[in-house]
Structure formats: structure tokens, C-alpha cells
Image (cartoon, rainbow, N blue to C red; front, side):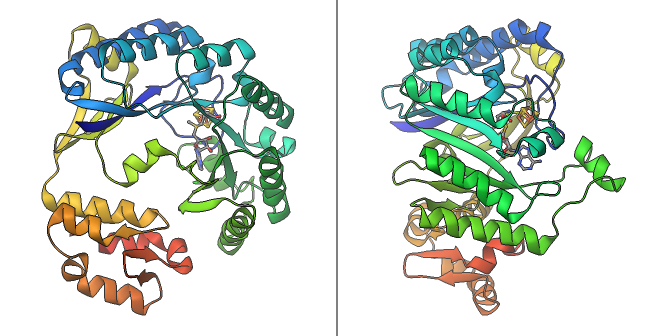
Length: 378
Ligand SMILES: C[S@@+](CC[C@H](N)C(=O)[O-])C[C@H]1O[C@@H](n2cnc3c(N)ncnc32)[C@H](O)[C@@H]1O
Ligand code: SF4
């Protein structure tokens, strides 16, 4: 039977971080009950379609799923276990903010089948945390981490951001050193994206903050990669590093362009030969589902060319690159035949390598991945 991954979006946060433009809201806690009912309605509307598959991974992301009452998380997961095929379920992740975890919550998560927790830490420098609007201090992360381990969560990811205002390379390595010392299984290490409309963007435009320049930002990336590899972490995707066998199975589904269904506000899906996404308006989302209407806003049929493009662009994000045999099996043509000129061009300019089994980005290619990716569009 085919496999499917489920993404569930929880769009609530306690306060908005200055850099974040994710689909997440503060001060709308009165909508939580209705929203969770809507998630359950949405899942019900997909019942027949989901049951064509075995669910392989579930990712509860946000927003901050850990800021709502854990009974909601339990309700969603119990609904899934009761109504869908989950015998092949290997990974259930929840995203958490260190300021919002406590022992009781973690116990309920564990009872609900959650086996992976992804913690948004960003940095362990308290001044920096405050300057980007985080609600927690480094000590809150240590406390959350301790509780997770005591409750036998043995697959933990930590999100870190580099390129923050006034951040130095020593500061970045210091945070990495501290999370590595704890033995976290997985690290997502993101370069700051200055998103238009965020508080940080405004401060930058007004000249109130200074960001590391591009050379320094790249140095932070390469030094950290070196440091993580030295400490036993495999660099397996542009922004992701894992101890052996702890790669995120859910995210690999995205990068391998396998089927996934997104439930909840602003979520994206890719299944049954279509890409589609939900409305980002929470009122429309709730109202549609009350009327048993799927809150889909955009839909696109994936023809073969689109699928090839996506397979290449997302494949290049993986450090192992695009698997040539998988490409041939999936599309019935050699990648070197289809993209001969593009591949040669980027081999010449030092951005990609054509190995026996795969086409992958070079170290320089990782810095300029956008330049390579656009060339794979047909
Ligand atoms: C949904 S949040 C994680 C869970 C929780 N909301 C939290 O922040 O603790 C996903 C992650 O995306 C990253 N992120 C969000 N906005 C970003 C930006 N503008 N640039 C780089 N990384 C960003 C952060 O590392 C964040 O932890
Ligand atoms: S980074 Fe996380 S906690 Fe902060 S606003 Fe975004 S989703 Fe919410």
C-alpha cells in the first residue's frame, strides 16, 4: 500500500518573534476550540482518500503546537489512530517552544504516540534571545530538555538561527557547542531570512540594527557545518544535520517528493497528482469546515515536467543530491540526457558535481543553490 505523510498546522503563539512571518497568531486563543474542531472536520472530509494510504509520518507544526492545551493534541492524534491506517507509522513530531513545555504536557504527548520533539531554541545567548522577541531564556531550554529526556523522548531536534543582529561567529559556535554537548539527535540550522513585514525587517530598514554581512553569514554556515561534522553529525540537507539514523523522516518525504497531506491553516499538500494549499484566513478556514467545505485556496495539476522540476530542485537540497537511478525509474529518462547543457554548465562553473550515482551541489553550490535550482525549471 502507498505511504502518506500528514502535516497538521497549529497557528497559535504566545507572542510574535520579531523575525517570523509564519502563519501564526497571538491573542486569538478564544478561537482554539473552534479551530481544533475544524481540524477534525477537515481530517474527516479526507477520510476515504487518506484510507488509500498507510500513514508513515505525522508532523504537528506551527505556530507553536506546545502552547495549546495538550488535550487538543491528544484528540487530533487519537482521531487519526482511530480512523486511518497507521500500522506503518514511524515518526510523530511536535514543534515546541522552550517557554511552553512542562512535564504534564510531555507525558500527554508521549501517551499520544509522539516520539520526536523539535524545539525552537534559535540561540542560547539570552541577550540575543531578547533582541529577537523570544519569550524564553537559555535556562528554559535546558529545563525543557531535561524534562523531555526524563520522560524518555529520545529523538530531539533543536532549531538554531545564524546571521542574527550583532551575532558573531563565536556566539554561533557557542550555541552549537552547548546543544551538541547535550547530545541532541538532530539540528536544524537556518540562516536568518529577513522577511518583509516583520518587526526585524522594519528595524533593519530604519537602520536600527546591524546584520552580519554576506561573507560573515556564509562563514557562519561553513564553520558550523565543519564543527557539526567533526562532532558526528551528518550534513544531509542544506539546513539539517543528524546523528546517524536520526534524519527527519517527515521532511525527507518533502525532499523526495513523496505524497503528503497538509491539514490546517495555510498548509500545503502534494498527493494524487496535485499540489494544493489551504486558505490562510482563520475565519474562512473555520467557517468553510463548519459547512463541510474543504478550505482549499489554490490547486495545481502536477504534470510530468512540474514533477521533474520539483524532484530536481528538492533533490539538490539534499547533500546526497539527485539520485540518478531513482530519476530514471521515476521518469523513464536519464537525467543527464534531459539536463545535459545545464549539468555541464554548472560543472564548469564549479557549482555541481556529476558523480556515479548522483548529481549534487558542491560546497560553493550550497552557497549559490538558487542559481542552480532556477536552471532546472523547464
Ligand atoms: C514554527 S517555528 C518552531 C516552533 C516554535 N514556534 C518556536 O519558534 O519555538 C519553526 C522554526 O523556523 C525558524 N524560522 C522562523 N522564521 C525564520 C526566519 N525568518 N529566518 C530563519 N529561520 C526562521 C525558527 O528556527 C523556528 O524555530
Ligand atoms: S518563531 Fe515560532 S514562536 Fe516565534 S512567532 Fe514564529 S512560530 Fe511563533
